[in-house]
Image (tube, rainbow, N blue to C red; front, side, top):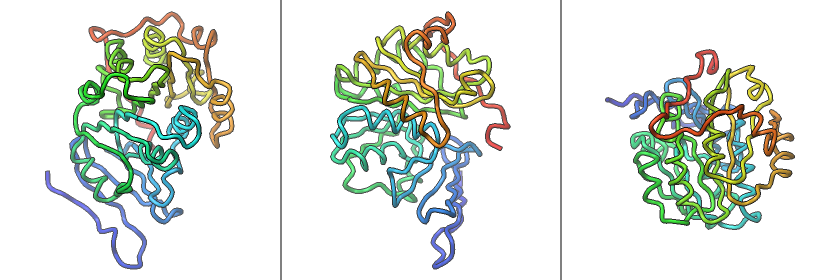
Length: 290
C-alpha cells in the first residue's frame, strides 16, 4: 500500500495529523492541542494509544492508567524490572516503565511491523531506554522469552478492536506462567459488553492457572450497562489489592476492584477457555468510538 501523510513539521504552525496505512488498517496520529508533543494513535478510527513525548509517565487512557497502577506496584518504587508487553501500539506502557523505572529491560511484541516503523519514526523512543521490539505474533513472541525472566507480562492485543482467540486460552496462560518469575504479575486489558460472557470466561481461565486474581473496571461495565475495558490482574503470590483498590478509586474516572469471593461470584459459573474452544473477544458497537 502507498503512503499518505500530512506534514507535521510546518515551521511554527501547529502539528498536523499523520495518516498512513499499516498492516492492521489505517493509522492516524492525531496531535493533542493541549499538550505540545502529545499524540493519539487510532487504527481504523479506534483509539489505540496516547503518548506524550515530553512526559511519558502521563497516561491519558483510563485502562492504561489502571495498568500503570499495576506497573507501579509490581516492585518497589523506581526498581528496574523485566517486562514483556504483548501488543505495542505506540509503546505507551513501555515508555511509562522506562520513565518510572529507569534501567528496566523490556521486550515488546507487536505483530504490525509497519505500525512499529511509523511509531519509531514519528514518536521516537528514548535512545537510553532498554526496549526491544519484535514484530511477530504475540503468542509466538512470548515463546521466545526465557523461562522465569519476566517480573511483569502485560497483554494488550487487539486486531480489528478484538482480542485474538489464541490469546484467551489456558494454553496461552501456560506460556505466560512459564515466562514469569515466581511471584511475577500478569495483567491483561480486556474489552467486553453485556452480557459479559467473554470477561467472565477470561476470569475463569485465569483462575485455572493463577492462585490470586483481581479485576479493575468502571462500575457501569461491571454491571453490564455498557461496553468497555477491564484490567485483569493475576499472580501466584498475593496481589497489592488494598493499594490497587485505592488507586483505581482515585482515578479521574473511578474504577472498582473485585477480588476473592466477589470476583468468583461475578464469574457466574463460567468455565476456563481452551485453545479448542477459544473465540475472539466481541467487536465493540460502533457507538463506542463516536
